[in-house]
Image 1: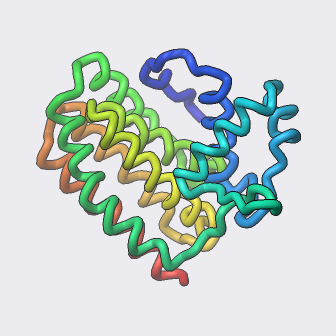
Image 2: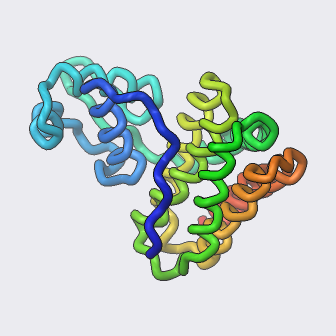
Image 3: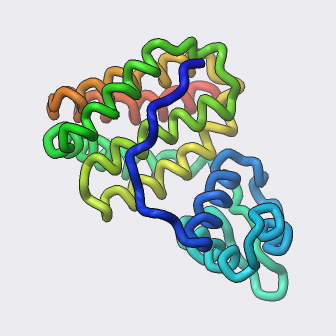
Length: 221
């Protein structure tokens, strides 16, 4: 597969932020299974850091609804409840189009150039040859780039949180989806609309993408 262009630059991460990003990724990709106990010592050792930043990360992840803590029982990965799909989609269908339009209308040219490079990479990729985790990472990458390009950190934080929850559902059902390549393929058109500054098209494509995702999941449950 063609190497992806570099991600949009971000500030260096603290140990707690690095722990948060790594554990978050494991949770949303279901590498830490739903309802599994969280061993903060084992996580700290696997990350090569102390337990304090891991514990700080877990507190943030509880706010994100990715982990839950019980007194005297410990911390666990939250379950993946398919009944949450409608609630998550209700929020995403309003905010994803807003972020796409803002990104198309407000992103500076260097960001547009990188987004266009990402679109061309995806367009030239054989999606069906990609491993499950690779597909999920590309899906996360595309959405997060658009959220960041929208230039509203509060909108970005909210969308990342709900897209993470949607991704857990996606991971749970992707092996049963027959048209996942179409879903991933929609990214190229969305990214191109953002890159050329077409706010109307970006908004419509983002709306259709979220609606299509919910329909695809419901078709197999």
